[in-house]
Image 1 (tube, rainbow, N blue to C red):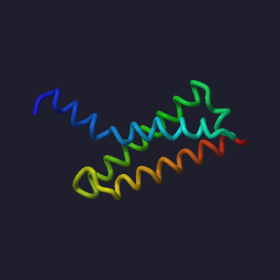
Image 2 (cartoon, helix red, strand yellow; image 1 turned 135 degrees about the vertical axis):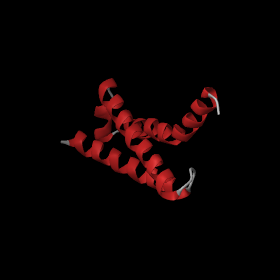
Image 3 (cartoon, rainbow, N blue to C red; image 1 turned 90 degrees about the vertical axis):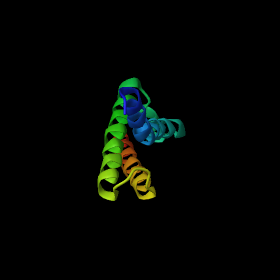
Image 4 (cartoon, rainbow, N blue to C red; image 1 turned 180 degrees about the horizontal axis):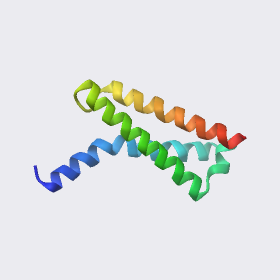
Length: 95
């Protein structure tokens, strides 16, 4: 496999984590409440970075534990971890 194919495989592997990392903070900020206060550039970037880091770790752990990529259990874990992280960020925004 060449370099181009390797980059494409890695990008496709991490795409769900990237999508979730962008979706969670954006939707939380658009829904309002305490999360709207975090809709500045620095806090949003921190949230996206945290979601991306933890989401990527979930995908790698799912690959290692389950033996193959794309299992629904891995995606369920990705959603649960993302929701938990966003809840923590939301609770810190109210304080």
